[in-house]
Image (cartoon, rainbow, N blue to C red; front, top):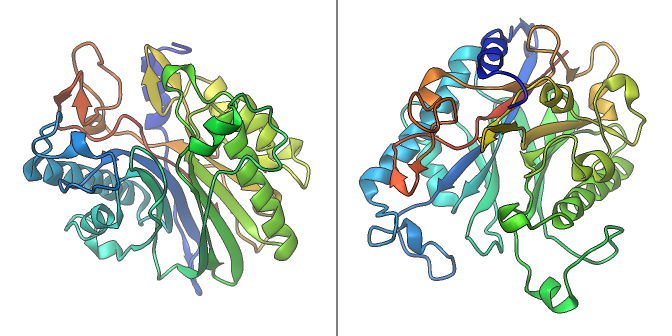
Length: 358
């Protein structure tokens, strides 16, 4: 572990966000991401590999357990609202089975007053999980969305899969949502890049980052001045090749060129922060990156602001109820299942977010 868990918790405890309003309305906006860790319903979908998450499946996934899961996810979102004084304007999510589970989530009494709208596409992932985006229609004016598939055509990444393996490969699409906040145009991308399970994906995650980055650049050319946030479970840390080389992520705004993205979690990762823990090592797979237009906006325009100790531009959100309190995994995120047994927790990831203001 890079730093002691004590220091990690102490730093997070100092995080705070001050939200102000001007005569025109909300001045600051929370933009974040949360991996909901297998938010499956209890119905059998023949098109998806959801057998584990059925009442008769290996997880004995009953309506009662599903109800606990939905309630827990809503509790975290509500807790972030209580901390920040407002709900997210934009919240990307991953590991959700379908639109139904998102509707159950946004209508949960704990967060129903947010009035979240949903953007979701059924994707080709073999596990049956998708990404999606929740947004506050009072703050974000939706214009369009697109589901961007993985493609091996035209890539500069050295791919190890054979042509036959490439044709069989299926993973989550990348979601793009474009709209306006105030009088400024934004685009938000939500990704869940290929897994590390079995030591796989060393070339597939760079491919996903390349696809997302190229699409961003095309959007910037089509809409000069557009402000972009990419977010998701990257299944890589901020210093990995996918984020640094293929997504052009920079540690500081000062290092950025106009074609680069600022990754606020790179410095946090170096300082020992983590959004998930694996075998005693904290990682930050859950990230938001921003383009030049959002990082360097002139006064009067929306731009990212520091929110943790007036130093870090990203926040990893955790509260004691989200943390395992005892046993082998003490200090880890309190997850839904532990060693194959229903634990009644939240997620194996902590949510992350940034704040933009003007």
